[in-house]
Length: 283
Image 1: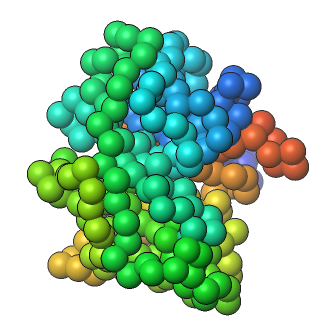
Image 2: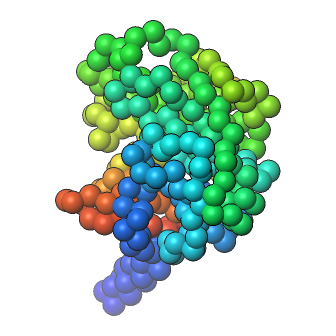
């Protein structure tokens, strides 16, 4: 009996190991901030703000295959990337830690051009928050930062990263129908989500993706699955990550394989791409 128990534990550990892989990323991606799986075969990626406005094309192990410069914009604070399923990439240039930016935007780039050219030009959709009148606002209203952008096929969604002091744990949800994208937009919240009150290190959203009718949002320590019911985001499932690091980007392929990327951190290790095969499709 003891042997059978040992064998069972061993097989579970082996299965867990085989279902997860981790790949160290190139130094040029040490501040990776967004990833997007395309046709289950390649990954589009970019770095955080202050880096060059480059879209990187990676293989599924994180190796850089090519790169493309977006020539008519700067990477002021690129935070996430998504695909609309119709041949376009969207990047959220809306990182805003101190809620004082007045130049927030979403940029759109054709995928074919990224794959075939070394340089492209983007369409730029600037926006402002209807409720913001001070730049920056008071410390208890630092709600105008975002790090997660996703697309359900018809709409772009993004979720604010809470930076309030004292910490409220509230994320404001914004919805932009693709048909209503305009050169200048004024946005107001569609809904809100409360994640917890332990602080931004544990409870603020840093990445997001959409898969089979559900919203998957990541913090540094866990992945959270939500289902939208009318205007309420119902929590369905939570995955606690085994390793705590600066997780900034997630994407899910058509088979439910989760790709998770983290930035380089002196204390927490190099930038890496982690692949988790089982969790998304488990009950």
